[in-house]
Amino acid sequence: MIQTNLFKGIIAYPITPFDAQEKVDIPLFKTLTERLVQSGAHGIAPLGSTGVLPYLTEEEKEAVTTAAIQQVAKRIPVLVGVSHLTTAGAIRHARFAEKAGADAVMILPMSYWKLTEDEIFHHYEKIASNISLPIMAYNNPATGGIDMSPALLKRLLQIPNITMVKESTGDIQRMFTLRKELGEEVAFYNGSNPLALAAFTAGARGWCTAAYNLIPGLNNRLYAAFSRQDMAAARDVFYQQLELLQFIVAKGLPVAIQAGLKIQGIESGYLRSPLQPLSADDHQKLEEILGKLN
Image 1 (tube, rainbow, N blue to C red):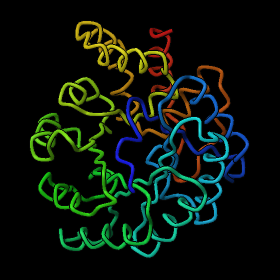
Image 2: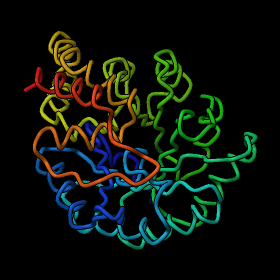
Image 3: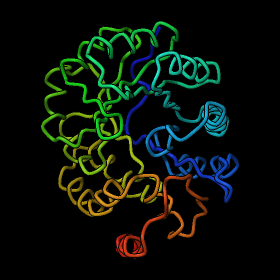
């Protein structure tokens, strides 16, 4: 039977670090993942946008998947990104993630050509029919190039495996529309860092966040405030971190998080081309933002 309530709270997205030759650094990835677990994350999600999924080979995706699952060791749930341009590619990695011990998979429809809603539906349907894991349908038009409407997401939920929806458009009204269209029983998650406050207010079950790499304490405090329905405290702790949330989204999650970790004295490896480090001005700005939060 498909589990429907695996994930809640803060789902942390680790970066995929590289060495100086731009090879995936698995030992460092495990170290960074362990840090997220020890900081109190409620779930770990490797191979999302923060983990530069599109820039990895199939073998690297499998290595990162295995490393995450082994490191977490069932202490908290693991949600593996298995998005791929082709349905066959997504099925292949989803099967690998299931065999490796993932608790669920996340799928973003990716396309060079704009897909029709029927094509998107059949993409998800075929993947779902090949695994028994719960699936999170991921809507992020900024990275995938496709914006799935609430009506399409509602249609996808007719597929038994699809039990979760992650919304990352950055549209506040979309959050409230999702709750209205999908109903109270459907688990939806915020993927837009600067909208965390609005999303929890709209009924999001969790926050999928890269910011946890840099400010786990503030992220934890925000979720704790919502959990006890202390809205004044939630607003206060959210606005403390808002400038950082806006910055990392504007500058690109992998680049900003990798730089932020180094600023905090935490080894984060290198980037893979074509990604490049922050400019000197942006690096200084990030130092200033983090300095105010310490």
